[in-house]
Amino acid sequence: MRYDFDTVTDRRNTTSVKWDLLKEGELPMWVADMDFKAAPEILQAIQRRLDNGIFGYSILPDEWAASYVFWWKSRHDFEIDPSWLSFCTGVIPVLSSAVRKFTAPGDNVLIQTPVYNMFFNSVTSNGRKVIESPLVYRNGEYSMDLDDLEKKLSDPKTTMMFLCNPHNPVGKIWDRETLAAVGELCLKHNVLVLSDEIHCDITDPGVSYVPFASVSEHCMMNSITAIAPTKTFNIAGIQSAAAMSANPELRQKIRTALGTDNVNEPNAFSVAATVAAYNHGGPWLDELRSYLFENKQTVLEYVRKNIPSLYIVPSQATYLLWLDCSAFTSDSKKFADEIRRKTGLFLSNGAQYGEPGKSFLRMNIACPRTLLLDGLDRLKRALC
Image (cartoon, rainbow, N blue to C red; front, side, top):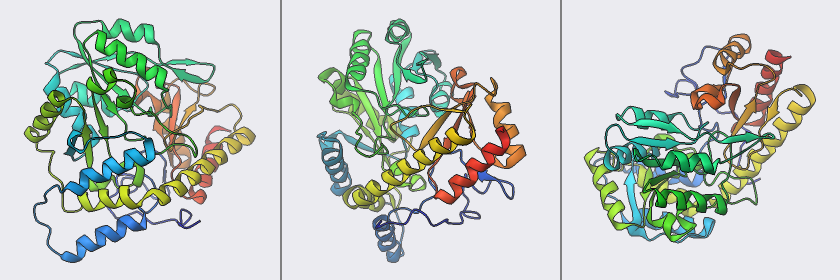
């Protein structure tokens, strides 16, 4: 391999949320950032910017949007007009700003649980109400309940839907037919779609995701999509994302909202990192996806041999595995705390992603294989 994903980098004492909040000897496999250095091409671009030595206010050059256009066309066969893009410091700020701009206090925002826990925060902290349309979990796999979805969307108080595509934490890539159905229902009931697609590039080798806006004219014109290089290239701390909408009215409103909330200005490294990632990071990402797929196979084989009562939900995307622990617990928070206390392994408890996650744990496998095997051994000690 051209790139090194096996070397363990000591991240302690770097103000890391993942590592610096732990006790000695604990192993974090919870929060969704990777234990791999960013692609050398990104580090070189940041170094060139660093060498200038002056870090004043930054503009947003044309090459920033051009890098998004290039990436989505070459990687996802979707043509984005550069005018559709608005800079934001992160995907969650896009969601929160959109909630404030496009909904009224007391409105419902629909989410499909179990889902990324910050979806709840973006809704409730802004005085809106979460309405859940739980995913169907049947025969060990997830799907949408379109009948329930329509019932919830038809409520006049429901004015926005958060779509997670691919879905975190279950690792599901929604197919074109399902996304088209969502688009039709939301148009029918006058509900705006906010699609979080931050995990879109981290798919199994040979597998692609479907951008929601690419599915139909209805999907394109009744949506705002939040996209970013940060999850893909492990540069979340750089704070760089985009709100994308082909609808000029929606685009102007979200652009105004981001400005009002003061989350529309790049820092000194945002542009350099983004442009390098999208213009030069493809080979690194391809090797990363292969490495993550091998990590996934390692987990599946280890669990099959050593913890057969634990079920790994099949996934096609993200580096997050959704562990069905129903053979062990119905209280994932207590269960995760016990595992951490016994072995130092820190996993995410599924209950924080909604009531349907109460017997699940989420495991981040984006780490060198030595750390992964350490985590699996700790998990075995806790459960067997």
